[in-house]
Image (cartoon, rainbow, N blue to C red; front, side, top):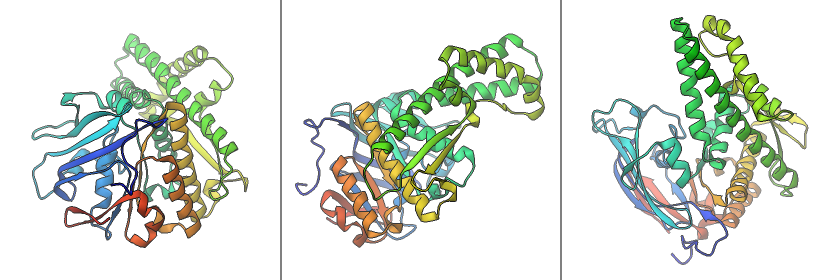
Length: 388
Protein backbone atom coordinates (compact mmCIF):
# COMPACT_ATOMS: atom_id res chain seq x y z
CA UNK A 1 0.00 0.00 0.00
CA UNK A 2 2.89 2.37 0.62
CA UNK A 3 3.78 2.65 -3.06
CA UNK A 4 0.32 3.96 -3.93
CA UNK A 5 -1.67 7.02 -3.10
CA UNK A 6 -3.73 6.23 -0.01
CA UNK A 7 -7.13 7.27 1.19
CA UNK A 8 -5.65 9.24 4.11
CA UNK A 9 -6.94 12.60 2.90
CA UNK A 10 -7.36 14.55 6.11
CA UNK A 11 -4.57 16.97 5.21
CA UNK A 12 -5.79 17.57 1.64
CA UNK A 13 -7.30 20.89 0.58
CA UNK A 14 -10.13 19.14 -1.24
CA UNK A 15 -12.69 16.51 -0.39
CA UNK A 16 -11.86 13.46 -2.50
CA UNK A 17 -14.64 11.00 -3.22
CA UNK A 18 -13.24 7.47 -2.78
CA UNK A 19 -14.73 4.04 -3.30
CA UNK A 20 -13.28 1.75 -0.63
CA UNK A 21 -15.19 -1.43 -1.39
CA UNK A 22 -17.59 -2.81 -3.96
CA UNK A 23 -19.92 -5.81 -3.83
CA UNK A 24 -21.95 -7.02 -6.78
CA UNK A 25 -24.74 -9.57 -6.65
CA UNK A 26 -26.22 -11.01 -9.84
CA UNK A 27 -25.02 -7.94 -11.77
CA UNK A 28 -24.24 -8.31 -15.50
CA UNK A 29 -21.51 -10.98 -15.86
CA UNK A 30 -21.01 -11.31 -12.09
CA UNK A 31 -23.00 -13.70 -9.95
CA UNK A 32 -21.08 -12.39 -6.95
CA UNK A 33 -18.03 -10.11 -6.64
CA UNK A 34 -16.34 -8.52 -3.65
CA UNK A 35 -13.33 -6.23 -3.89
CA UNK A 36 -11.58 -3.62 -1.76
CA UNK A 37 -9.72 -0.54 -2.94
CA UNK A 38 -7.01 1.50 -1.23
CA UNK A 39 -8.30 4.86 -2.44
CA UNK A 40 -5.82 5.47 -5.24
CA UNK A 41 -6.60 5.09 -8.93
CA UNK A 42 -7.50 1.65 -10.26
CA UNK A 43 -6.59 -0.12 -13.51
CA UNK A 44 -8.74 -3.05 -14.63
CA UNK A 45 -7.01 -5.27 -17.18
CA UNK A 46 -8.49 -8.05 -19.24
CA UNK A 47 -9.53 -9.14 -22.73
CA UNK A 48 -12.64 -7.74 -24.36
CA UNK A 49 -15.73 -9.29 -22.83
CA UNK A 50 -14.05 -10.08 -19.51
CA UNK A 51 -16.35 -7.80 -17.51
CA UNK A 52 -14.25 -4.67 -17.04
CA UNK A 53 -16.90 -2.25 -18.28
CA UNK A 54 -19.51 -3.96 -16.09
CA UNK A 55 -17.53 -2.88 -13.02
CA UNK A 56 -17.38 0.71 -14.27
CA UNK A 57 -21.09 0.57 -14.97
CA UNK A 58 -21.82 -0.55 -11.41
CA UNK A 59 -19.80 2.41 -10.11
CA UNK A 60 -21.69 4.79 -12.39
CA UNK A 61 -24.91 3.64 -10.70
CA UNK A 62 -23.68 5.25 -7.50
CA UNK A 63 -24.97 8.44 -9.13
CA UNK A 64 -28.56 9.22 -10.21
CA UNK A 65 -29.82 7.85 -13.50
CA UNK A 66 -29.24 4.70 -15.51
CA UNK A 67 -25.47 4.64 -15.58
CA UNK A 68 -22.86 4.98 -18.29
CA UNK A 69 -24.70 2.72 -20.76
CA UNK A 70 -28.14 4.18 -19.96
CA UNK A 71 -29.49 0.64 -19.91
CA UNK A 72 -32.93 -0.38 -18.70
CA UNK A 73 -32.91 -1.79 -15.18
CA UNK A 74 -33.77 -5.33 -16.27
CA UNK A 75 -30.57 -5.40 -18.35
CA UNK A 76 -28.38 -5.12 -15.26
CA UNK A 77 -29.24 -8.59 -13.98
CA UNK A 78 -27.14 -11.65 -14.66
CA UNK A 79 -29.48 -13.63 -16.89
CA UNK A 80 -28.19 -16.92 -15.49
CA UNK A 81 -29.53 -15.91 -12.08
CA UNK A 82 -32.73 -14.51 -10.54
CA UNK A 83 -34.40 -11.27 -11.55
CA UNK A 84 -33.03 -9.24 -8.65
CA UNK A 85 -29.61 -7.62 -8.67
CA UNK A 86 -27.67 -5.46 -6.23
CA UNK A 87 -24.68 -3.16 -5.79
CA UNK A 88 -23.16 -2.31 -2.42
CA UNK A 89 -20.33 0.17 -1.99
CA UNK A 90 -18.52 1.82 0.86
CA UNK A 91 -17.42 5.34 -0.01
CA UNK A 92 -15.53 8.15 1.64
CA UNK A 93 -16.87 11.67 1.21
CA UNK A 94 -17.64 14.92 3.03
CA UNK A 95 -14.23 15.26 4.65
CA UNK A 96 -13.52 11.59 5.22
CA UNK A 97 -16.96 10.48 6.40
CA UNK A 98 -17.86 6.90 5.50
CA UNK A 99 -21.13 5.93 3.80
CA UNK A 100 -22.67 2.66 2.71
CA UNK A 101 -24.52 3.01 -0.60
CA UNK A 102 -26.67 0.19 -1.91
CA UNK A 103 -28.84 0.04 -4.99
CA UNK A 104 -30.63 -2.58 -7.03
CA UNK A 105 -33.90 -4.28 -7.69
CA UNK A 106 -35.40 -6.78 -5.30
CA UNK A 107 -37.59 -9.71 -6.30
CA UNK A 108 -41.01 -8.53 -7.44
CA UNK A 109 -40.04 -4.86 -7.84
CA UNK A 110 -41.50 -3.55 -11.07
CA UNK A 111 -40.58 0.13 -11.15
CA UNK A 112 -37.15 1.72 -10.82
CA UNK A 113 -34.21 0.81 -8.67
CA UNK A 114 -34.09 1.23 -4.92
CA UNK A 115 -31.31 3.30 -3.37
CA UNK A 116 -30.25 3.23 0.26
CA UNK A 117 -27.63 5.24 2.14
CA UNK A 118 -26.56 3.71 5.43
CA UNK A 119 -29.52 1.29 5.16
CA UNK A 120 -32.06 4.12 4.79
CA UNK A 121 -34.14 4.46 1.63
CA UNK A 122 -33.50 7.73 -0.20
CA UNK A 123 -34.45 9.53 -3.40
CA UNK A 124 -31.40 9.03 -5.61
CA UNK A 125 -31.60 12.36 -7.45
CA UNK A 126 -31.55 14.26 -4.16
CA UNK A 127 -29.39 12.18 -1.81
CA UNK A 128 -26.60 10.72 -3.97
CA UNK A 129 -25.18 14.05 -5.24
CA UNK A 130 -24.72 15.14 -1.62
CA UNK A 131 -22.35 12.22 -1.05
CA UNK A 132 -20.67 11.21 -4.28
CA UNK A 133 -20.00 12.63 -7.72
CA UNK A 134 -19.17 10.33 -10.64
CA UNK A 135 -18.19 11.25 -14.20
CA UNK A 136 -17.21 8.99 -17.08
CA UNK A 137 -15.87 8.73 -20.57
CA UNK A 138 -16.63 5.66 -22.68
CA UNK A 139 -15.93 4.61 -26.29
CA UNK A 140 -19.59 5.19 -27.15
CA UNK A 141 -19.08 8.86 -26.34
CA UNK A 142 -16.34 9.27 -28.96
CA UNK A 143 -18.96 10.21 -31.55
CA UNK A 144 -20.82 12.61 -29.30
CA UNK A 145 -19.93 15.64 -31.43
CA UNK A 146 -21.57 14.14 -34.54
CA UNK A 147 -24.51 12.43 -32.85
CA UNK A 148 -27.92 13.84 -31.96
CA UNK A 149 -28.36 16.93 -29.76
CA UNK A 150 -29.88 14.73 -27.05
CA UNK A 151 -26.54 12.90 -26.62
CA UNK A 152 -24.65 16.16 -26.14
CA UNK A 153 -27.38 17.50 -23.85
CA UNK A 154 -27.13 14.38 -21.63
CA UNK A 155 -23.34 14.85 -21.55
CA UNK A 156 -23.81 18.51 -20.58
CA UNK A 157 -26.24 17.58 -17.81
CA UNK A 158 -23.91 14.84 -16.54
CA UNK A 159 -21.20 17.48 -16.12
CA UNK A 160 -23.69 19.83 -14.43
CA UNK A 161 -24.75 17.10 -12.01
CA UNK A 162 -21.16 16.78 -10.80
CA UNK A 163 -20.98 20.49 -10.11
CA UNK A 164 -24.49 21.27 -8.82
CA UNK A 165 -26.09 18.94 -6.31
CA UNK A 166 -29.59 20.00 -7.35
CA UNK A 167 -29.19 19.43 -11.09
CA UNK A 168 -30.16 15.76 -11.32
CA UNK A 169 -33.26 16.44 -9.23
CA UNK A 170 -34.19 19.40 -11.43
CA UNK A 171 -33.89 17.29 -14.58
CA UNK A 172 -36.03 14.54 -13.05
CA UNK A 173 -38.70 17.03 -11.94
CA UNK A 174 -38.74 18.85 -15.29
CA UNK A 175 -39.13 15.64 -17.29
CA UNK A 176 -41.91 14.39 -15.02
CA UNK A 177 -43.81 17.66 -15.37
CA UNK A 178 -43.36 17.58 -19.14
CA UNK A 179 -44.73 14.03 -19.34
CA UNK A 180 -47.77 15.04 -17.27
CA UNK A 181 -48.37 18.07 -19.50
CA UNK A 182 -48.13 15.94 -22.65
CA UNK A 183 -50.63 13.42 -21.28
CA UNK A 184 -53.04 16.16 -20.24
CA UNK A 185 -52.89 17.76 -23.70
CA UNK A 186 -53.38 14.43 -25.47
CA UNK A 187 -56.36 13.54 -23.29
CA UNK A 188 -57.81 16.93 -24.24
CA UNK A 189 -59.35 17.40 -20.81
CA UNK A 190 -58.69 21.15 -20.92
CA UNK A 191 -57.92 21.33 -17.22
CA UNK A 192 -56.65 24.88 -17.56
CA UNK A 193 -55.76 25.31 -13.89
CA UNK A 194 -53.65 22.16 -13.79
CA UNK A 195 -51.97 23.02 -17.10
CA UNK A 196 -51.08 26.45 -15.69
CA UNK A 197 -49.59 24.81 -12.58
CA UNK A 198 -47.55 22.34 -14.62
CA UNK A 199 -46.25 25.00 -16.98
CA UNK A 200 -45.33 27.42 -14.20
CA UNK A 201 -43.33 24.71 -12.40
CA UNK A 202 -41.76 23.59 -15.67
CA UNK A 203 -40.62 27.14 -16.36
CA UNK A 204 -39.15 27.47 -12.87
CA UNK A 205 -37.28 24.15 -13.08
CA UNK A 206 -36.26 24.86 -16.66
CA UNK A 207 -34.74 28.25 -15.85
CA UNK A 208 -32.80 26.73 -12.94
CA UNK A 209 -31.51 23.98 -15.24
CA UNK A 210 -30.46 26.62 -17.75
CA UNK A 211 -28.74 28.69 -15.04
CA UNK A 212 -26.67 25.66 -14.04
CA UNK A 213 -25.74 24.98 -17.65
CA UNK A 214 -24.70 28.57 -18.31
CA UNK A 215 -22.63 28.65 -15.12
CA UNK A 216 -20.89 25.41 -16.06
CA UNK A 217 -20.11 26.59 -19.59
CA UNK A 218 -18.75 29.91 -18.34
CA UNK A 219 -16.56 28.12 -15.82
CA UNK A 220 -15.21 25.64 -18.36
CA UNK A 221 -14.48 28.34 -20.94
CA UNK A 222 -12.65 30.43 -18.33
CA UNK A 223 -10.47 27.51 -17.29
CA UNK A 224 -9.80 26.60 -20.94
CA UNK A 225 -8.85 30.24 -21.63
CA UNK A 226 -6.17 30.01 -18.94
CA UNK A 227 -5.01 26.48 -19.73
CA UNK A 228 -1.41 26.41 -20.90
CA UNK A 229 -1.24 22.64 -21.46
CA UNK A 230 -0.10 22.16 -25.09
CA UNK A 231 -1.06 18.49 -25.30
CA UNK A 232 -4.86 18.64 -25.45
CA UNK A 233 -6.63 20.70 -28.12
CA UNK A 234 -8.60 23.52 -26.54
CA UNK A 235 -12.35 23.46 -26.79
CA UNK A 236 -14.71 26.41 -26.83
CA UNK A 237 -18.24 25.71 -25.60
CA UNK A 238 -21.60 27.32 -26.26
CA UNK A 239 -25.18 26.34 -25.53
CA UNK A 240 -27.61 26.54 -28.43
CA UNK A 241 -30.82 27.10 -26.51
CA UNK A 242 -33.32 29.94 -26.34
CA UNK A 243 -33.65 30.02 -22.56
CA UNK A 244 -29.89 29.75 -21.94
CA UNK A 245 -29.20 32.52 -24.44
CA UNK A 246 -31.83 34.84 -22.94
CA UNK A 247 -30.36 34.36 -19.46
CA UNK A 248 -27.19 36.05 -20.68
CA UNK A 249 -29.06 39.36 -21.03
CA UNK A 250 -32.15 39.13 -18.81
CA UNK A 251 -33.08 38.50 -15.20
CA UNK A 252 -34.35 35.10 -14.00
CA UNK A 253 -37.89 36.24 -13.21
CA UNK A 254 -38.57 37.70 -16.65
CA UNK A 255 -37.25 34.55 -18.33
CA UNK A 256 -39.49 32.35 -16.16
CA UNK A 257 -42.48 34.42 -17.27
CA UNK A 258 -41.34 34.18 -20.90
CA UNK A 259 -40.94 30.40 -20.58
CA UNK A 260 -44.40 29.90 -19.06
CA UNK A 261 -45.98 32.15 -21.69
CA UNK A 262 -44.30 30.20 -24.50
CA UNK A 263 -45.63 26.92 -23.10
CA UNK A 264 -49.12 28.45 -22.88
CA UNK A 265 -48.98 29.72 -26.47
CA UNK A 266 -47.76 26.33 -27.73
CA UNK A 267 -50.57 24.22 -26.28
CA UNK A 268 -52.39 23.75 -29.57
CA UNK A 269 -49.17 23.05 -31.45
CA UNK A 270 -48.05 20.56 -28.79
CA UNK A 271 -51.43 18.85 -28.83
CA UNK A 272 -51.07 18.07 -32.54
CA UNK A 273 -47.39 17.15 -32.33
CA UNK A 274 -47.85 14.95 -29.26
CA UNK A 275 -44.87 16.45 -27.47
CA UNK A 276 -43.58 19.64 -25.87
CA UNK A 277 -41.85 21.54 -28.66
CA UNK A 278 -40.28 24.34 -26.58
CA UNK A 279 -38.01 24.21 -23.57
CA UNK A 280 -34.58 23.42 -22.18
CA UNK A 281 -35.00 19.79 -23.31
CA UNK A 282 -34.32 21.11 -26.83
CA UNK A 283 -30.99 22.79 -26.08
CA UNK A 284 -27.73 21.60 -27.64
CA UNK A 285 -24.09 21.77 -26.58
CA UNK A 286 -21.91 23.25 -29.30
CA UNK A 287 -18.17 22.52 -29.11
CA UNK A 288 -15.44 23.88 -31.35
CA UNK A 289 -11.66 23.68 -31.53
CA UNK A 290 -10.61 27.20 -30.64
CA UNK A 291 -7.15 26.83 -32.21
CA UNK A 292 -8.47 25.70 -35.60
CA UNK A 293 -11.67 27.73 -35.46
CA UNK A 294 -13.87 24.82 -36.56
CA UNK A 295 -16.66 22.85 -34.92
CA UNK A 296 -15.68 19.60 -33.23
CA UNK A 297 -17.93 17.73 -35.65
CA UNK A 298 -15.58 18.82 -38.46
CA UNK A 299 -12.46 17.55 -36.68
CA UNK A 300 -10.90 14.15 -37.27
CA UNK A 301 -11.88 11.22 -35.06
CA UNK A 302 -8.59 11.46 -33.16
CA UNK A 303 -8.96 15.20 -32.62
CA UNK A 304 -12.52 14.73 -31.37
CA UNK A 305 -11.35 12.17 -28.82
CA UNK A 306 -8.57 14.47 -27.63
CA UNK A 307 -10.99 17.41 -27.36
CA UNK A 308 -13.29 15.22 -25.27
CA UNK A 309 -10.52 14.03 -22.94
CA UNK A 310 -9.23 17.57 -22.47
CA UNK A 311 -12.78 18.71 -21.68
CA UNK A 312 -13.31 15.91 -19.14
CA UNK A 313 -10.05 16.75 -17.36
CA UNK A 314 -10.90 20.46 -17.31
CA UNK A 315 -14.31 19.61 -15.87
CA UNK A 316 -12.70 17.49 -13.15
CA UNK A 317 -10.59 20.45 -12.05
CA UNK A 318 -13.52 22.89 -12.31
CA UNK A 319 -15.64 20.76 -9.98
CA UNK A 320 -12.77 20.62 -7.50
CA UNK A 321 -12.28 24.39 -7.69
CA UNK A 322 -15.97 25.30 -7.33
CA UNK A 323 -17.13 22.64 -4.87
CA UNK A 324 -13.87 21.64 -3.13
CA UNK A 325 -14.60 18.07 -4.16
CA UNK A 326 -12.91 15.82 -6.70
CA UNK A 327 -15.35 13.44 -8.38
CA UNK A 328 -14.59 9.82 -9.20
CA UNK A 329 -13.74 9.47 -12.88
CA UNK A 330 -14.42 6.35 -14.95
CA UNK A 331 -12.36 5.96 -18.14
CA UNK A 332 -13.33 2.98 -20.27
CA UNK A 333 -10.73 1.92 -22.86
CA UNK A 334 -9.45 5.48 -23.17
CA UNK A 335 -5.67 5.04 -23.29
CA UNK A 336 -5.58 2.43 -26.08
CA UNK A 337 -6.12 5.06 -28.78
CA UNK A 338 -3.75 7.70 -27.40
CA UNK A 339 -0.17 8.19 -28.51
CA UNK A 340 2.64 8.07 -25.96
CA UNK A 341 2.68 11.84 -25.44
CA UNK A 342 -1.01 12.06 -24.61
CA UNK A 343 -0.97 8.90 -22.49
CA UNK A 344 1.80 10.41 -20.41
CA UNK A 345 -0.05 13.72 -20.14
CA UNK A 346 -3.21 11.92 -19.01
CA UNK A 347 -1.39 9.95 -16.32
CA UNK A 348 0.49 13.03 -15.12
CA UNK A 349 -2.76 14.92 -14.64
CA UNK A 350 -4.38 12.01 -12.82
CA UNK A 351 -1.40 11.72 -10.48
CA UNK A 352 -1.28 15.49 -9.93
CA UNK A 353 -4.98 15.79 -9.06
CA UNK A 354 -4.91 12.79 -6.68
CA UNK A 355 -8.45 11.92 -7.80
CA UNK A 356 -9.59 8.30 -7.81
CA UNK A 357 -9.82 7.27 -11.45
CA UNK A 358 -10.95 3.83 -12.62
CA UNK A 359 -9.48 2.85 -16.00
CA UNK A 360 -9.87 -0.22 -18.18
CA UNK A 361 -7.55 -1.69 -20.78
CA UNK A 362 -6.25 -4.86 -22.36
CA UNK A 363 -2.46 -4.33 -22.15
CA UNK A 364 -0.43 -3.65 -19.02
CA UNK A 365 2.32 -1.92 -21.01
CA UNK A 366 -0.03 0.96 -21.80
CA UNK A 367 -0.28 1.80 -18.08
CA UNK A 368 3.42 1.89 -17.17
CA UNK A 369 3.24 5.64 -16.62
CA UNK A 370 0.79 5.23 -13.72
CA UNK A 371 1.74 1.77 -12.47
CA UNK A 372 3.35 3.02 -9.24
CA UNK A 373 0.38 5.24 -8.44
CA UNK A 374 -2.49 2.82 -9.02
CA UNK A 375 -3.84 -0.55 -8.02
CA UNK A 376 -3.87 -2.95 -10.96
CA UNK A 377 -6.29 -5.87 -11.21
CA UNK A 378 -6.72 -8.58 -13.81
CA UNK A 379 -10.36 -9.23 -14.67
CA UNK A 380 -11.72 -12.56 -15.86
CA UNK A 381 -14.01 -15.46 -15.05
CA UNK A 382 -16.13 -13.22 -12.86
CA UNK A 383 -13.23 -12.40 -10.54
CA UNK A 384 -10.67 -9.65 -9.83
CA UNK A 385 -7.09 -10.53 -9.02
CA UNK A 386 -4.64 -7.89 -7.85
CA UNK A 387 -1.36 -8.01 -9.78
CA UNK A 388 0.70 -5.27 -8.10
